[in-house]
Length: 422
Ligand code: GDP
Ligand code: IMO
Ligand code: MG
Image 1 (tube, protein in one colour):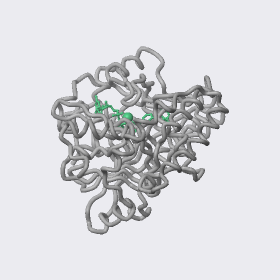
Image 2 (spheres, rainbow, N blue to C red; image 1 turned 90 degrees about the vertical axis):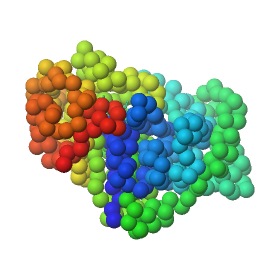
Image 3 (cartoon, helix red, strand yellow; image 1 turned 90 degrees about the horizontal axis):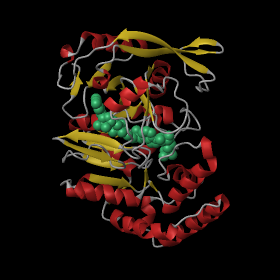
């Protein structure tokens, strides 16, 4: 049995949460492998919307096991809020959710360091979600971090204090005013809450599920263009968001990976700073933001909007070995007379279909092809044959350019608004 992976091919917010929820009935286990509460994964069904930050998007299916893998970073404060809200909605999180002992903890001082680092960068800030992600992964790779399993050790408090001492020195260096004491009670309350959950050696558990023939889906956070190695560095997150991250973030071997679902929007968005070659800083961009309700699920910030970018998508498909594509938010483009598709970039060395080292506007300009748009409301359509001819042409064009089939087309935020092609 293989472990399938679902991940974002753009700069995040492609609709991963919705699609994982849709696919969950085909899996027994859903496992998050990287990132942390910088993620905001939205799901809609029965008229309600839910946003998940740390918890896998299979949690609303009562018979599915959800695992937070070792590659994830957990903020106990946000985790408590998230799980309390789920309990109120009748979700049995104590039964259906398991946490890797090797996942690292986000301390309140990590959040302060994130804010201090961003403030020090001034205009060149990353546009971080300020959830403490970067500093927590820095402590992980610097071999100073504290892991979920450490809360079971008698010297947990001493380990915490030792690390915080270092953070306070760093905050002093930044000359950053803070209120750490005010943040600590909620953190320790979160730690007590965490103790109520099943903490596991997730690499053993996931491999055992796989061996026993139970299907596992690894759920990515962020998107490939935010990957620490291959994204638009330094405007990236601090983890490997690509398929390889599923191997390190869950402890599964490369050969055990099966399908790799790559998800992208019918257009493109980005939140935070950094280059975005196809960005529309005009009325069309505004219109996409308004119709697509493009505001961050975690921070509420307006998302930057632009046309679909094929050099970027080809790059992501290559890095991940995508076997099936999923296109979301096709409904948002209804009503545009023409749809533009960036098929290649113009660079100082001539046109290219590849993603160059630097995609800053000084170095690349998108070259567009146009296709005719469609005006029909797609949100009630449930069958590929019902879709407007021009949208089908768009799908065919993208498949030919990307050389991977589009297996699912999403036409609205609800679970039901999903067209799975036979
Ligand atoms: P994620 O981070 O990849 O899970 O994506 P987000 O949840 O942050 O952002 C995607 C947004 O688009 C959410 O508000 C979803 O409810 C919504 N959404 C997902 N698929 C579709 C779709 O096909 N059409 C429309 N209109 N909205 C969608
Ligand atoms: P989901 O899983 C979109 C962006 C931030 C910022 C950069 C670094 O919902 O797709 P960080 O807090 O990680 O240090 O921020 O990455 N970012 C996301 N953008 N969706 C996300 O997650 C994101 N997580 C981080 O806006 O530009
Ligand atoms: Mg999101």
